[in-house]
Image (cartoon, rainbow, N blue to C red):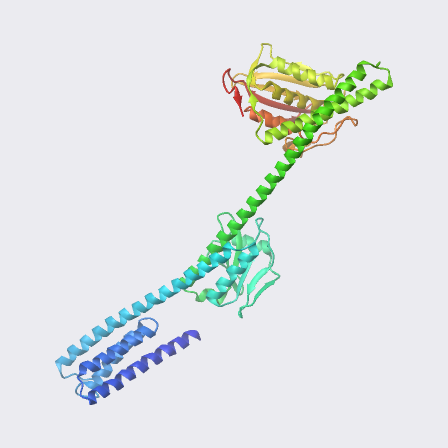
Length: 509
């Protein structure tokens, strides 16, 4: 219907201008003007037709009709299409050439002007859309602004659907009705099916029954879907399609920017929370160290002043064990906060492995006096570049963990060996406990991750710091640590360190 109206409009302009030029020509003839003036009138009519009609067809028709009417009305013999004068033939040829050239140039200028106006509209629309998208406070607002921009450009019904990062439908369907009313309504289609269809789409759009769905995507996934009536999509020209894709690209960039801001805000929030937690733990730990040391010293003094068969000895011993456990926990918390803040400096020096193992055993034996630990060390003295205090803490934590998960009469073994090919030294702590569940294995070195309780119901349960600190210390030395279940039962923790050379990385962060 719209196409027919255009044809009728162009035909009316053509006929009106030719009629007007003919009437003016007759008037000029009666007034005694030369035929040159009549020709100018027809050329003017061709220019007007070429300017105000679509395409080049009506301009050419105006040229043909003008030439024919000029021959019919203003050249002898009148009212026939015969030509007796050679000069009239030249006039016709010149008239046709001038009319065609002027009509073509006028039509070309008209098309260029039309394209310029369309590009101006496109640029203005995209500029306004970009300003709105910059001020968008959420993903839903981006959908609203994009929907309005498409509606203002095409004046048709428009739909918009947002997806979250997991590909689920985020909110309701945003829709602009044909009367310009914006509504939010429930989306009745299968959101997962639509998402997968958009993700695997290899064409410009996905055709539904009444709509064509344009995907709004980035390099990784589908961000949203723009829905346009199928008839409108079929009638769109190249310029309109270009504009729609421009709106889609601007919307995709806005959604990505908004998601990026959200991620950054979340990371900053988590970082701030971790900082507060670390400061709190460090403050609590510092405040607890002094009274715990006093409690341990006093309980040891009471134990030395009391016979072992005295009930007060057991009471003092219990106080000492609990205070010792708390003291160990405080030390782990302090180590953790230092590692997280990158404040722990490694004092790497050549250390005799036997001495480091001996120091670790003395600490463990002081806590657990009745536990036997078998030691397997290389026959030759072994010197390794390490921070002896920190590696000793790793061994103490691993042995402490093994004791808590092993019955008193079961074996606990500490073994050290050297891989000369890779120039690495390996430390292994084996126990005869219940082993590690498969679902726990990937997580046991995570901070604050705990497994089931120890085999001794009277033991105090840890809070998941020991193994995490072990991993951090070993990795700071350039090594690694892992855990596995033993075939004969129990668990084994193994870590390795580069042996290194004296003078190499004596002090590092």
